[in-house]
Length: 499
Image (cartoon, rainbow, N blue to C red; front, side, top):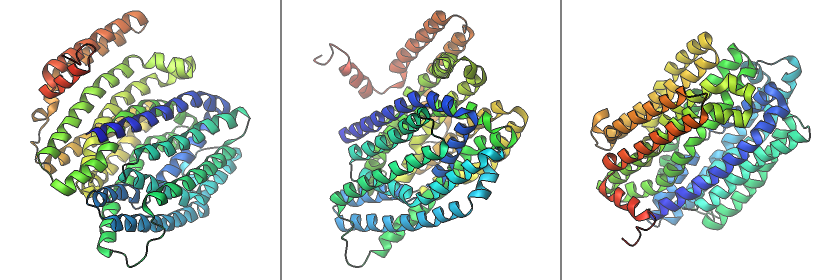
């Protein structure tokens, strides 16, 4: 477990750095570009993020299979996995890039409701990202290889460099009065540099470029089959994730997207903690499943991780709801706060569910059932599109936030049911560790509601929130944690190390 803790710390540390850079840069970028130009930049990057997921799930698959083969000393298999993954991703990137460049105008007309003066910016931006698409897909492969090799230090270093170039570079260019196209050009050149770095790092570790002899076709088939279902989930998930943005842009106004994106980006950063943990767990549990199967140790680690996530994210979500106006006012100003506070509060609740759901999603793929995660998202897709359309049409920005809340709660419920069935655990809300958190959760709800009611008295609000948090911690420690977890916490307290 020391390895998991170390890698989790590396993941969280790198994401905290990324979050700080984004937090500092976003106000400058929004004010410098204006609502419409910032929305264009965000939506273009959304398109990029979506098409990079058409990688046949190779990035996710390569982590699992490299970790499994590395654990049993099959180095030849590791080299074959990397070589095939690079070839497949390069070809897919070329095809996707060609389609984006060739259909940039129809894509722009479909997804962007902007005046003619802005449309040339949209078209040029889409063509530019299409040219660099092979590099964007290859980055996912190489980072997956590094994680499978347990080199989370190198993988996170590259991720921090990418984000610094994206957010920091955009801020500098905005200050220098460069437009959206120049910002995207700079980001793409930064990706070129970091891709070269990744090639050097993976080649020095695996020597995949010099592979010779026939490939193990059964291994290749296994990687592609697993990755195919991962891709289903990856392709459908962004359709779910970004539906609200494009419905707002197409049915209300492109400028309204900003009042959704900024709270979304802020509240979604609580995923830093859960993704940091499950990303470290993924290769470790892939190895464990490959060697011992679904034994008691596997189930114990799963349930322990579940308790950690529940314990951490309930108070985080409550705190963000309580102090949403203060956070937005300090970050984005009074005018923005007036429009986006309710959206921020609803999304804070939504991402509590999403953060906890990262665990069953990861475990299902670690045990080789990427087909189940894909099916969950296929089930959600038509439901979410209908719900989002109706809510945005009727309630605009608030409807988009409610649609997100509904989707993430449904997603968590379905993933937990599948994971419980697969791992042989009892299925049912009150039979799971959640029942131990019902009383603490009720205290948080009452405390948060009382604090929000004191919105005009910040000192009183903070006092009530602090009291609710302390009561939550006491009850969780007393009733929700296992004895070994209590002993570990006591040992970490000052003055108790030698007790």
